[in-house]
Amino acid sequence: MAKLSVYKTVMVQFNKAADLMGLDPEIRKILSMTTNEIEVNFPVVMDSGCVKMFTGYRVQHNNVLGPYKGGLRFHPAVNIDEVRALAAWMTWKTAIAGIPYGGAKGGIQMEPWEYSRGELERITRRFTFALGSNIGPEYDIPAPDVNTNSQIMAWIMDTYLQMMPPQERNRSVHVVTGKPVESGGSLGRTKATGQGLVYVLEAWAKEHGFNLDGATYIIQGFGNVGSWAARLLKPLGAVLVAVEDHSGAMVNPDGIDPDALAEYVAAEGRIQGFAGGEPVDHQTFFSTRADFFIPAALEGQITAETAPWLNVRLVVEGANGPTDIDGDRILREKGIELLPDVLMNAGGVVVSYFEWLQNKRSEMWDLEEVDAKLVKQILGAYRRVRDAVRKYGTDWRTAAYVVALGRLERVYKERGIFP
Ligand code: NAD
Image (cartoon, rainbow, N blue to C red; front, side, top):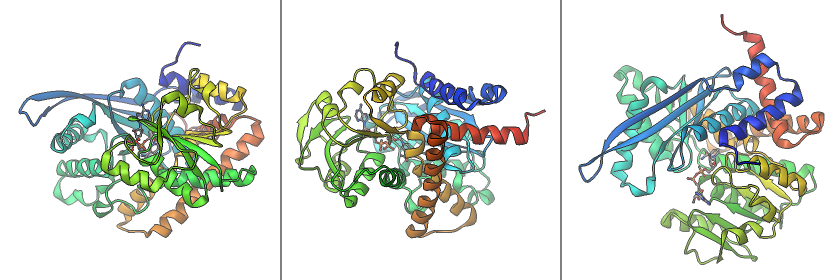
């Protein structure tokens, strides 16, 4: 099969679930398209004094359940097709998680590592200015994604607030989530995506006789999602035996310490050079024998080429869209179970919702409260998807879509289509 674009991959997944559940054909038309697609070209003065033009995107997929919500990515592969796909996944994810948000995504096509801190700040602020009122605390709320973090969110918030009358600034800090805690962020947000993944994996493991204590795993991507998932799996006794990031891959059958590696990556920005493992190539990494694999980098990693290499029992998607349609099919043929992105990485947007609520109410929750609420919310999502797996006798990805589409369909039917 020819390689599909990322958005077409979403549509194949969507149509499979829509067919299975008999989604209303009129609502299917609406959910098959994005609502708004914003593309901005904007100039930024570089440290050299030269001006450079950048292209940024914000795609708002659907907001029938609440304000548009989704991350911003700074990466050279950002393009309109990818952002559309990521926005649609956000619509499904917030619906599955049972939180009152729609789906959006955005980003800038750029190599963030090529710019100084000052340039990054000016690029971020100028992008925010260019987006203008296309984002807003009750309208469209960005968050961190690949190569963006709490510092970038603080700059976005600050820029957005500068564009408001002074009286309105303090009640608009929830224009972004994933902020530093001192600037209105929530405790527990940084680890939330990895934490949600681990809570759901634990629940699934318990129900499927899969012992995490002593289980081996490999992980691709050791950024926010990957490193936190690994660090939180350590106390459960799971052993990291191979890891890959943009700089290369390494294996160690005796185990790689996630805490030491996270410290190294925080200092060096890459896993390459870490003393705790033997460097290996991409194929050797993918072929490493382990109990499970957590892709936590980019989309389109488990494909017709790489899926045959995998030597695991389970794939736990931390990244968005790491498995393409061929990859999914090959995993099924090989009898490898898959827990999908729209469920497994929903912890991040759930705690983003908690941050948004705290900002709106001028509250500050302690970490225990955040974690207790996260576990309740994410396990509710897990049970809804598990029940759909049983009811429809289907795979976990399709079941997750059925849960999302069912909720969206109910709301459209209640509200009707204007006029
Ligand atoms: P990040 O920028 O913190 O980390 C990305 C990681 O991927 C880095 O370790 C990087 O080296 C690695 N990587 C990049 N290109 C690679 C390549 N070609 N091969 C192997 N590794 C590569 O990003 P993140 O926030 O951890 O996001 C990772 C994934 O999780 C993305 O798909 C993102 O959309 C998804 N996600 C993130 C969040 C969040 O809260 N940050 C929430 C939900 C989903």
